[in-house]
Image (cartoon, rainbow, N blue to C red; front, side):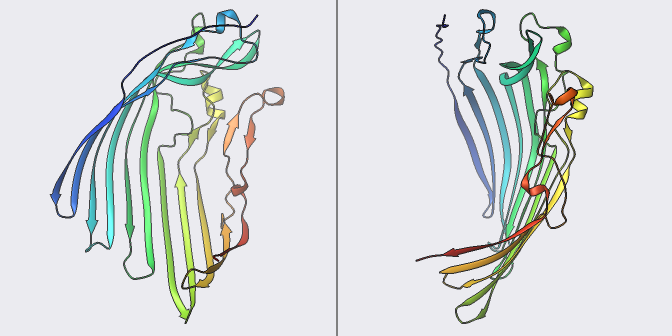
Length: 281
C-alpha cells in the first residue's frame, strides 16, 4: 500500500553585512549568510519501507568579503570578492545498489565546503566601446561523506573529491563597439571569449570511474557584426558561435552499453553561424 509520513521542522535563515567606504570610490564589505533547505523524502520508482527515510534539512554558513571600486572618474568598475561556504547535511543524489541495480538515491551526502575568489570589471574607455570580463577560482569539495545506513564502506566518496560541475578556474572577456556610419545608421561589432578548467561529471566512490567522468577544460570564442538604427528601432546581427570549432563535452554519465560512458554534446560544441533581427514598433 502507499506510504504515509510527515515531517515538521523550524529553522532560521538570513543575511547580515557591514560596509565601509575606504574612499569616495572604494567600498569594502563583509557579509554572513545562514542558508536553509528543508527536509524531504527519497522517492524513486522502487521505493520500499527501508528506503523511505526522511532526508534531513540542509544548512549552510557563508562568509564573503570584498571591495567594490570605481576607477578613472567613473569610466570603469572593478569588484573583488573572497568567499567561504560550509554545508551540513548536503542534499544530493548519490549512487546506491538496490536489487543489484545502480540507482540514484536522494540522501544527505554529508559535509561539503567551497571557497575561492572572484574578480570582475567593466570599462567604457571611449564612447561606444565597452570592455568587460571576469575571473573566478572555486575549490568545492567533499569534507566528510555520509553513507546510507547499511551501505558498503567502499561506497564512501573520499574526502577532497570535487563537487560536480565545479571547475576550479573560469574566466570571461568581452568587447563591444558601437559607432555611427551615417545619419540614422550604426555599426555594431563584438566578441566574447570564455575558458574553464576541467570539472567532475560522475560522482562515484570508484576512482577510475571518477577519472572517466572528468570533463576536460575548454575555451570558446564568439563574434558578432551588425547594422542598426541609432534610435534602436531595428538591428540585424551576423553571429559566429565557437569560432575555432572547439569540441567539448557538457556532461558524462555511466551506464552506457557494456559499461561504457555516455557523452552529452551540446550544440555549441560545433562552430555555427546565424543572423538575428530585432525590430521595435
